[in-house]
Image (cartoon, rainbow, N blue to C red; front, side, top):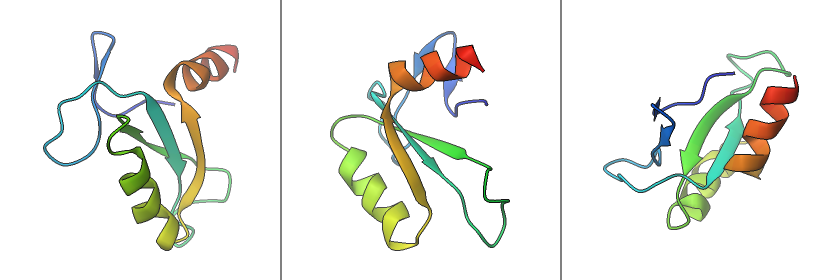
Length: 78
């Protein structure tokens, strides 16, 4: 699975205008558009994790919030 904003091992928060390093991966899907097992991802810094999680959560899209290093480790295994 590809992560957004990944360039030369630099990960940037997905929040609009934020240039901070990402710490979290927010896995989500829109059930009207995606199959249940599909996971799209947003990256979040510490400051924007809660805001982005709430944005996805109120829409029923948020499936998981995981530390970036944990996400990368599980993706390398699969």
